[in-house]
Length: 304
Length: 302
Image 1 (cartoon, rainbow over the protein chains, first blue to last red):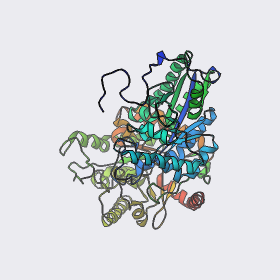
Image 2 (image 1 turned 135 degrees about the vertical axis):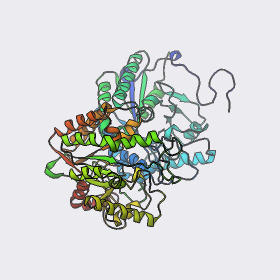
Image 3 (image 1 turned 45 degrees about the vertical axis):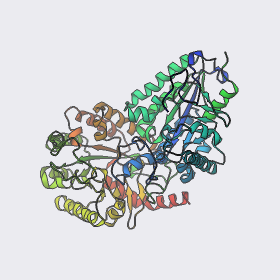
Image 4 (image 1 turned 90 degrees about the vertical axis):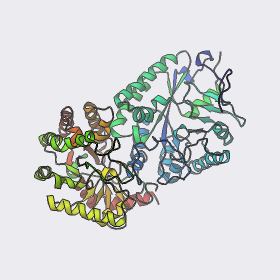
């Protein structure tokens, strides 16, 4: 619906709140930056449902005619090879992973579910599959069912219900936050508009945003904007330096969203490794899962 | 499994039978020049337009690629010769008929060949089963006639295929398919008869997608070296495959050939590199690891 010309946001999900007017957010041990690395395990389908929607970038490579072995198998690289490089890199730097896992992965890759759990990752909801984004094309019932099925698949595969959610390709309709909250989710990573968590309005219990840095998402930087990988390492480091500086006054979150089929390629992983190494050598960095960060924020809200 | 239904069992690279390459090499390196011909006035198959810029012919784009055969190939071959590289060419078979000097130059160097179709302007997607069978007969016969070599593998023309492709390839006696970008080691592909594996090709270390963007030769050299470093490190535990995919019209440009030299100079200065071809990788893998890999994956997915 077109905006009404009045104060504040043109939707009901959260309040207008410029960062410079907020109280002070303190992380554990007065850390300046809470570092969260979200790792996407998502799958494009060979034969997606006829009414599904996805973006042209979703498959990575430019689409070829059916059957597109190259495009689909390039994504599969993440599940077979790339994920292990990424998780190993995070482990070496003492960063707990937050794995956004779609239902298709949860159901078809029990090995990966176990592996992620064994490495201490938090697993969060990531929809049904990469080829099925949430959009306003869905009816409310269809969207409710979609979220419920995604959550159920993860719950069956992992033994517990996910606390967090990242929609495939950050997709939402205009009612998604409410439906996520209704489904028992406690935080969502679709909104890339902040450097601190913030509360969303929800009639069904607390729901927070864990904001991701979209420009640092490897799909945005390396694929859509075609940033050279050495420069990507610099973007990560320069972003971190600024947040580290700003975080001295008021705590910041640096949430990176990474895709193993992309950053997990042999020639790219070293650049991520070096960037994370530079960050983790500093004191005052709290590497944490999405839930750790949101729970801390809830229990220790910003103070004036 | 989803990719595509029932073709590939899931097998995580950290939990597989260990691969030992010949002489204890860590990395099997293969170089894949795409030696191609794009038709001047192709027939549009309604699926993929080879010259989407304008009504055919598109002289700018046609001649840009033809440069590869007239000039670029020879410059590229000079660089490869400096390091005694034996390539596995991704070959449009009609090149052998149109441009015999290129065929002779490749045969003289004892390179291997995988099929890349007949022309790079004729794609498989719309082929009937019988047309596709005939296509394999044609590519096998053409290669044999002009080079004396037995065809063993294929990169689909412009990476095109049908749902039947792996089955029909295996039926025709081919043993590897390089359209799969899913791994750093060969992977068994389930087929109706015979044995077929994917051999890792590269859509990333590939001059065509790179140089269509803003990247240039120095970046190509940087990422090839980074790729090698990572795979070489991992290859100490279990052998890895590294492929560098080339197109003579791109890598043979005067400003780029030097970067191929830089890459090869770096890689070939290492011990533990098995500089080989996709033919040899596929044969070695099938002879030594195929059965074990299939059994291991079946057990893991049971």
